[in-house]
Length: 193
Image 1 (cartoon, helix red, strand yellow):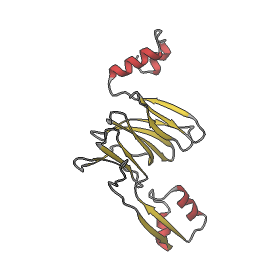
Image 2 (cartoon, rainbow, N blue to C red):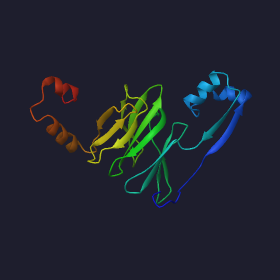
Image 3 (tube, helix red, strand yellow):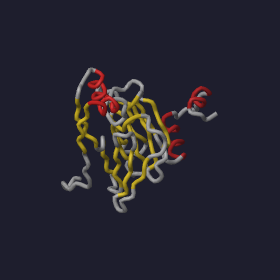
């Protein structure tokens, strides 16, 4: 936290070898690098297990944890209640960001493919999932105007992902972006027809 206090810290180091190492080779708890080392003949590896990423909401009410088992936990700081996001995680949570008002949580999920999942904090429900096809190891940032999130990869590629909590916000966004009447093709793309 900004004041230097730690809310929670949990890291376990496990040394794997022999049959346990072979069995762990397919585990989602291992990083791609660890699995590659096993495939290349490593006889022993040390695995550190703890949250992959931790994010504090701007209002200080929630903490989100991306865990190595592909779960994302949202903790209410005042009560200690833990809520897991719903919907199968597409991969391990690699980065997290809350919306400015703390009502949405964006998660970069990396597995077979990379996706941005956006979840409702109050319920844990997934609202949307967007494939991040061409981005290499993307990070996620909230848009401070509250109109979604941006992903930025290590090559500098930025993608903006509009996500709106209210239908009126989506309509206002479309009116701003498309001041002229939409064509039939644009209406189909935005599922208006």
